[in-house]
Image 1: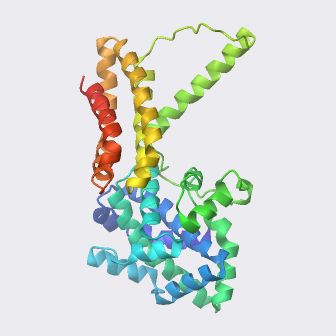
Image 2: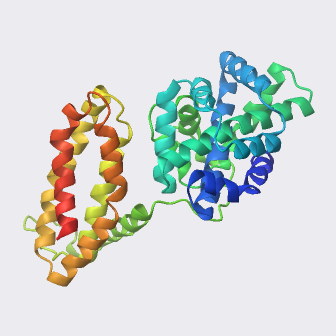
Image 3: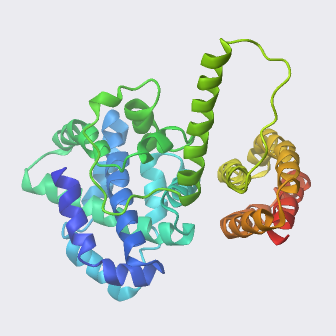
Length: 351
């Protein structure tokens, strides 16, 4: 997509200073740029769906600097993004700080980078995207209504530049305002995925390491089940044949628990959302017993391997849990379920 490519080139040319400012290595910064820029452009273009949205976006665009390259250089020189950038984004997407927090958490999980780094990058990208929109509007001599029509016509193309897999992740995350509505329309069950342009290739695929390990196991289990159905003729076997656990299957089960716990915590920002997360945490707590049983059946060497792998995957969960429990009113609701889950996973990782 020409619009995305043009802005990406300007930001990628400063990827070195950006990486230093964000505290991430260059490949992660490149992948983050390839996700953040088209996501913001598509999300803000979603304002074209309503007259009020077009009015809000035009007002923000008029205040932007129409030279994104110079604006980026200024921010890098200052060493910090604009303080009001995230608040402006929340107002444009419709949902304030809550929608920005959810977007940041969703992108951070997808990319495997720190939320603080993503927050800085998003805050820097917002004025650049608005500035690029202003440049488009100015070069094509568009009035406010014409600019709205331009963005409405570009929405599917902008969404097509979002990295493969991220669109559906956004569609499955509630509370993302106009960005969520756009994603659900183009990538969700009710949308027509065929209407979106092919995804823009990303040099460094932004995929979660843990999910990339878990998915193949799920596929293998599904294939094994289908083979069993063919061999058994679909008989309802009342006495299951026990399958001895292996280091690989036990590690995958543990990492899946970590991923599911992170997902359960993703939307927690107050006591009400904490209560909504309890059923998922209760389900996770019940599954840990099965994990412990499988771990106990392994030999000493296999247990050491599982503990090492599980320990390596707990860092993000520790950090997320600490942040969530520090929110006023949340600890009282979640701690009775969350802390035993963390303790048991830590125990398995330390064995």
